[in-house]
Amino acid sequence: MHNVDVRNVSLGQIMYFVKTAEYGNITKAADYFYLSQPTLSRKINSLEAQLDLQLFIRHSKSLSLTPAGKYLMEQWKGLVTQVEEEIQHAHILQTGTTRSLVIAYLDSFRQDEVLLPLLDRFSAKYPDIAVRVEADSASRIRQMLIHDKADVIISILYDFDAKDFSESAIHWTEFNVSTHCACMLKTNPLADREAIDMSDLKESHFICISPHELPEYTRMLQALCNACGFSPDITNYVNSASSLTMNLRHEKDVFVCDRNYLDWNREQHCIVPIRDTRSSMVLAWKEKNDKNYLADFVEEVCRMFGCSVG
Image (tube, rainbow, N blue to C red):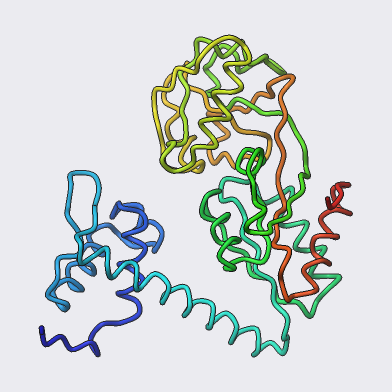
């Protein structure tokens, strides 16, 4: 047995390791922590030296876990989440409140039109409820709900449509209904139109979320195109919806989203509605939740957006 002094392993090092393993990319993980890539690399190397373990296999543009790294990732990921939740609960107790609500929000959604007004309205009405918001991908926030890491999530229709959540006893309702949209460079010939048909995108090069990460997005895109008699020419796959805009490089590049999509580069991009299509946001929660005030939040969303629980 190796003689490792665990007193020298900090929670910060564990968090650096877990997040780097989640991203599989040192640059993306460094951005998450607001660190430079060399700084985070040194921290990971230091942890491996302290543990006398190789945790990652270094590739040219990515990282993969060794068997030892996979084992520690499985053990430590839950530990990090638990510590974060316990610290958050301690802050809630310090403020004098005893009720809390965890909302998980799709990280590719704009916050200004839905989330922030909703939080302001709910907090003004229920000031004794401490609200925490987490943002992540559609698949991850869905898992947060299933595994009781979030009380309610705000996601996208394609991730819930045609799914059976009976075993997880999840209820969901649509709100903020809109059409699908095509996001493209402003140099695209379709960019100056007020609206387009899906058939107008027949010659486009589609950027798509990887089916390994979110197969529901790929199915949604294929269904929209197939209904117009063509298959999408997918030229690039990305790992998350928030990465889509970064890969708009050429005049014919497009991806499908809706008006709620958060585009960080509106000076170069535009979002054009696609006629005769339908998208929406989804509010989802578990039937069995001992926080009876969760119903107040659901009702507030329904009042604000004119939707119904059912």
